[in-house]
Amino acid sequence: MKAMMRRLAPWAIAALVAAPLIAPPNQALAADHRETSRAQGDPAADIADVYAWHATGAGTLTAIVTYGGGADVDRRTSPLYDKDVLYTINIDNTDDSNFQPDEQILVRFGQNNIGEWGIQVVGLPGADATIVGPVGTTITSGTKGKVRVGLYDDPFFFDLTGFKNTLQTGTVDFDDARDGFAGKNVMAIVLEMDLAAATGGNNKVRVWATTGRKS
Amino acid sequence: MKTQLKHLVLALGVVGTTLAISSCGDDDKGTTPQEPGEFTFRSDSPAQYIRVDRMGMPAVATALISPANKPSYNDDDPEDDVSAGGKWAPDIVSNLGALHTALDDDLTTLGLTPATVTLATNQGAPLIIPDVLTLTINQAAGFPNGRRLPDQVIDLTLAVILLDLAVHDVGLFAGLPLNPDSNDKSFSPNFPYLASAH
Image (cartoon, rainbow over all chains, first blue to last red; front, top):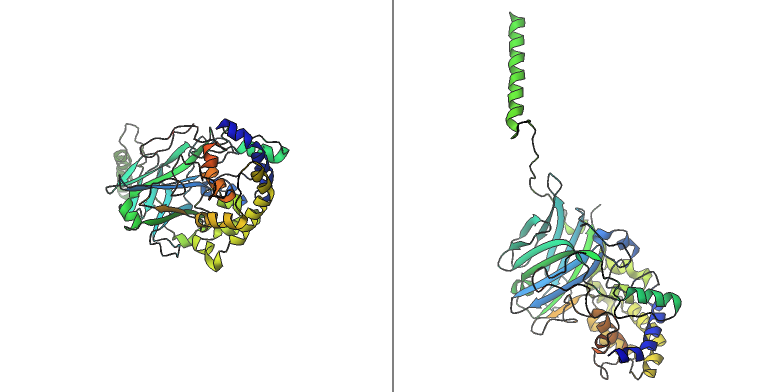
């Protein structure tokens, strides 16, 4: 495998040198971390990645939205919660090609009288209409519903340094052992829900996330 | 007499106030620890929030949408992606074309068969237009059928948009790999699945 990788080195050079055609050097070819100036200035609303997978045996669908991360920022060492940001996880489960959400899970953060942070989840399929609990703990609802938010290792992996170096120098510096997101943390909203409720019993499901800020 | 009565009333008032204050506290100092109370959240409707970001598939907005278009792209929804025959398709195809113009000679030299821009578009479009993660429930989970934490999404995406998949396996780059093939910390098999913070 390594030999084949070395044979592909010219390809890697070309790919990385060509990359400015589609991404300026100051922007990471990352999943979505800090991809616009607007998002860069608003880390609490800057989606890093969206994950969604199903487990038919367990009868669950899991969705994770990460935010406030990035390989080109200092490691986040404390959690980040903002009461003015709305996180929406959209699910289109009817395969009707309108790509409009049939289910919307709304996530907000808020505080109590002594400044502790809590999470509110509205619309988690198969669970209570509204779920509220403290951050940093697993909150359960219904038979399959689980909610948790906190600071975690950034699960994304990618050679960002090699990408940037090659863009700047034209000399390949691409290393599959170098992970630009190693050692980085990111905030993560983790939602698990009843698969049948999330899909409406249908076979095709589409998932995406948005963030909005209330000024 | 009136003066004495007034003083008595005032004195009783002071005592009553003192007793009332003392009775509030549950410690010897008479202070009142604040109850945490319930969490309070904004109740504004989603329409009252101003969009900041959106995401479905990894790397689409970052790599295949021109920088000048990204704010507008984030403001849109998947239904906009497919409007007018693909609102953002011209930008995506243009960037794919530029990529192939630069890379196809090198791919060919290496014995690989690059996709034509049309083929790359046809291979990639179902995955990236609209910008959503698609899950087919009766098939095994794993990118591009949804996205699990350990999936090598960048190498797989590069294969889809660069290689003729009638000739090459979609897992060619991931098998090398071009990028790291796993996270720096192990994921958990149990909820919440993520590795602990550094």
